[in-house]
Image (cartoon, rainbow, N blue to C red; front, side):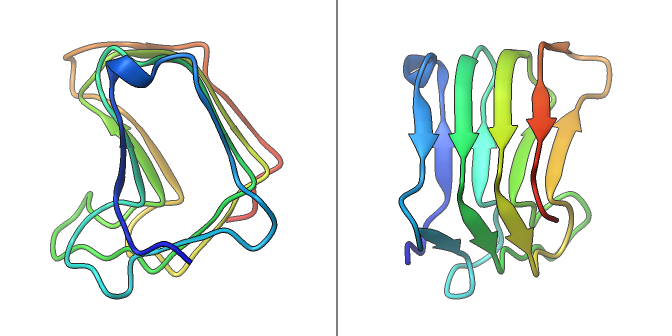
Amino acid sequence: MYAENVVIGPAQSGITLKAEPGAILDGSTLGNGDGITIQSGVSGVTIKYFEVRNYKGSSDGVGNAIQSWNCGTSDISVIGNYMHDNSWNGILVGNEGEALHTGWSIKENNV
């Protein structure tokens, strides 16, 4: 079990995060935050087979399993993850007119 907030920045473009059986990202001992944050400029990332749980937020929009907000990303795959007991969303992708997300594939996840 890992108690941390994972941040994927542009330098990590092209990586695959593939969990081994039993790998859990758990936010229960952390303050406000998201399990995995994908920053602007990231492309070609795959996130597979994680359990992401217990991420909390004291305001709307915080406490997601995976989030990429107000930034531009491309070719992101989120496959076969189990996301539960988070205070906001399983996967939050979007913006408020700042940048576009393209080529996302979200499949076989359990939220």
